[in-house]
Length: 503
Image (cartoon, rainbow, N blue to C red; front, side):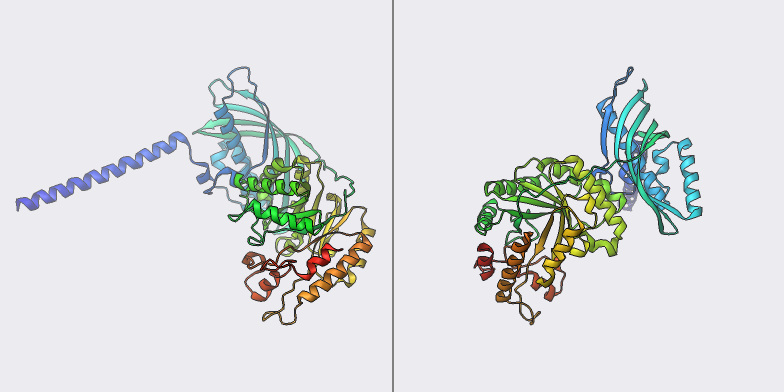
């Protein structure tokens, strides 16, 4: 009996201790939350760092303050919280979600936002907006470190306005703002923001260039890692030997591809950049010029994603732009194939913005866009330095197609992809053979010579496997992609190889 009473008493004491510990832990967590301010990723309902969702270009023009100096930590905190205020406001006007507004705007400031939101809701208006650049100057920083006044100049903003789901307007604005921020609960909240100036966004014009040579080249992947040049199998020795083969073909240019997600999206992988530089070094040693195709396998284009793609672009271009092997930038491969699913106006708006961003960072190398067909080739012709298109049709009309394009533009034209698959088998019994491929290159190179066409063939090697994301899961599509090469999977040169070499 005594043992049972002792057992019961012990259990009661243990339960009491556990319950009190839980209560104390909960109180501690609440106090910690109140003392430090809510975590931004939770406020924004995003389990993400800021580099993954909103990265406009920020320049601090001045942080001089006659009273209290602005500490580096608080400068970073002000910048982060101020940009988050822009982000949650943009999100609210697109989705009508007001949840995070109170976390980034003071009570007085959010009254106007709520009134504007309600008016938009009543009129079924949604605004998709992002800011791309901010030039910040500190005008005042209070002695107690709780109030800051900023001037935010040259705020480049792009917006699309929808009413009843129909696009009504899209375009850029360039504005200056006066901003008052208050430190509340560990967060710099917007107390007041006023537009003080509006101007026009000026475009950076494309250059009128002549191609230094007639491009005679190859779209390049290593044989054992197609569509994954910079993956785990990257080997500079293999690349060096491949470039020797390309030079044996008397070609002068290669075109390579940088996958957006593969390189880390907005947070670009240093390991991938190192591999890219190694490839360029090998190309330079082999006296090959390189066209770099950016944003491979990217297909979002949403305005809210533009700062992320801009960050990705600027990181890569700033590292590579002075490399002697770099010949040109191809902004995006076959973006016209996304017109139907993403909308032509959105895709072309994104292309225009990325072209402008690229040109502002690297004004010295030509820019093109690799369109999937000659019919699309003159899309955004004014934005690029030379026109590129791909051609996988019968060669009968190639000369005519090229001549017609020449008549419609004064810019150089490059046939950026062309080739013929030699796959004939179970899934394509009426396909072409290696003999047909040889005849194809014989005819192609005759047309090329007669019309002085710059071209890049597809591709050096036959491949053993094709990633599903490239050709889908159907074997008749995937098998066809395996056999475009001039060298088979056993390393044997096909007859077409000699035709290219002897052109």
